[in-house]
Length: 327
Ligand SMILES: NC(=O)c1ccc[n+]([C@@H]2O[C@H](COP(=O)([O-])OP(=O)(O)OC[C@H]3O[C@@H](n4cnc5c(N)ncnc54)[C@H](OP(=O)(O)O)[C@@H]3O)[C@@H](O)[C@H]2O)c1
Image 1 (tube, protein in one colour):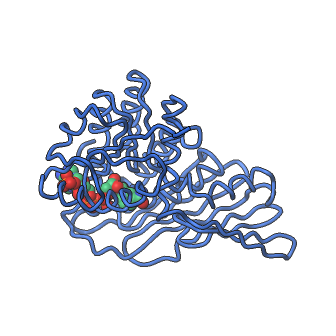
Image 2: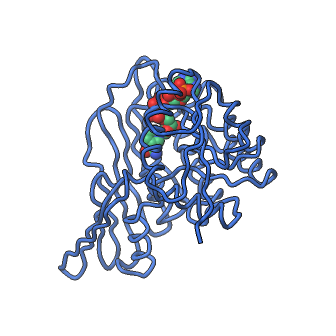
């Protein structure tokens, strides 16, 4: 029996929406029904490239289209909350880019809207659905490396983005922490939960005041995580999980990885998981599974998981003294 198609809309025709749309084409039963940009010419060019059936010059027009089941929101972080809420109020299910929101207060409102409107809602935390990450979490849960004692994860590159754009400008929620520091924070949270204590330090851009480097230590009852994100220089973007019975190295760049190495009893075993597309296919498939099961949240990356993660980042920001103008 043929499975029912899931009809997608994309809003914000920028960098990540482009990669996402290419991966959407690889997923069974995913139809790109419409795209929307603030600029019709841009929407049409994006729509033509990705074979969208329709192109709109406003996000609201896309939300109003009765043909669309689920909207992927790919705008700067500062617009995630208002646009996700608006889409759900229009009756759409929503997959919203990471970070889900600027802060826990916004995320709470978004989740409340999902529960009230009974619309599926998920943060596009794609790494959670990456086959390597799924497999390593399973292997750790099965006790392969014993009890986790230490996690070390980094994600840093030299950014040449314009100072006024979304990456560097505080007005758009700019800075390394929310853009890429969220990944090391996610890894520690996924494996060890909410830290008991956080120590963090940032280096700020002298003009825009966004965080250019943020280092964090998450302290747990019986473990520690040392995490780093930055826009000033390249790092290896590797992750190391050290347990009482063995170690795991997630291959770089670990947030979009194809495999990991397990070191145990003086033996090294390499596990490779070929990727479908660039890796967004797995979160798309999770959306499809949830929609077909009429769920409003994913069990793999739930509302609580997103709220916990942004709450951890709120604590980090408080520690380093990083506030957005909207707060
Ligand atoms: N999952 C990942 O691996 C990944 C990677 C990169 C980024 N992201 C996330 O995706 C989101 C978008 O990032 P991006 O790199 O795609 O950004 P981008 O290239 O700047 O695109 C963002 C899009 O948002 C729309 N937008 C709406 N209001 C805007 C405004 N006032 N100023 C600028 N753009 C506005 C624009 O689309 P229109 O002009 O078409 O309306 C723009 O093209 C961010 O939240 C980021 O954290 C995720």
